[in-house]
Image (cartoon, rainbow, N blue to C red; front, side):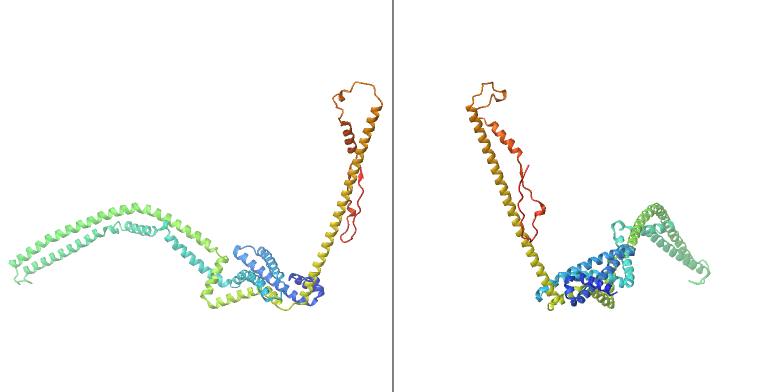
Length: 481
């Protein structure tokens, strides 16, 4: 168990950027790097949860797949945080430490905001779900108003009113037509005039009868002058009543004719308007239904952020809880960089001095090895050049010796030919055209001798000097083939 715990601690220390060889010499610095590695793993765990929640909210994927994506994102965050820590070397200058820390703190702040947002949304998901429903209803109403203002449906309200009016006209037999209002007003006026004339005629008839009975007027019963006058007035009013009745009948007939025409026109327009109204209403309803379906599925991160912002604006307690929780997650993400910066501000530790010392020693050793390799390679190249020059000089001597031998042999042969006369014979056909100074045989002999002698220079791999040995390979004698 102790060995396992020790291996885990070593892994955390290496994760935080510690050197295992230096920690073996300075075990006191191990606890600091183990704690720093634990902080890195904590930020990675938060990143895993954050990405899993974000993928689930944005894409609605299966939880195991979201967790797998979250693990990948956590690995990226841990790697980025480790890069930020490893890149912050200890420096005694406060100014240089701040210059190194500012961009790293800025990057860590961005990562903290990105990581904290899905976690905050998940913690307040119940309140956010309620606000999302309200936002969806507002979006639906706004879309409905936009459809009403759309040019395609601009005449729909008027068409609805016209359709309702046509239905009323047909149901009333045409009398509900607004165009008949003047005629109906004439009927009302004619009816009033007729009623007034009839009332006057009845009053005059009653007065004549009263005069006849002697119950009113002069009080004298019988058909006297008063009665005759009253009767003439009553008879004259009868003509007025007949004229008023005629006017009323004419007005009623005009209204009836207009109602018949209105009903016929309304019945003809009703079917056309019903079809157009059904088409526009169906199209508007389809668009609204499509938007409502999409709006109902709109439960992603964006609308949740809008809901969280709306809740924070309307509720102070919610706003405080939201910002404090976000600051908590951001602080956890900033903690490794801030901790490393605080460690760099302090005095150099034994670990830092030993790490620098070993780095300097490694550099000096590498420089010495590189210098030795360069010197050995230069010596080997010089030796190869000398050997090649020697080989070329020997080839030159051999070529000159063979040339002198051929010349001497040719001179001796010529002298012998001059001392011993040969019988005259006819020249061979192939020598007939050769001149006396032709050196063809000599050049042919030289080419034949040169073709039989080939010199090569090879260097065996097993004689290559080792780095730092100080010995040089011996030149190999050229081989004759």
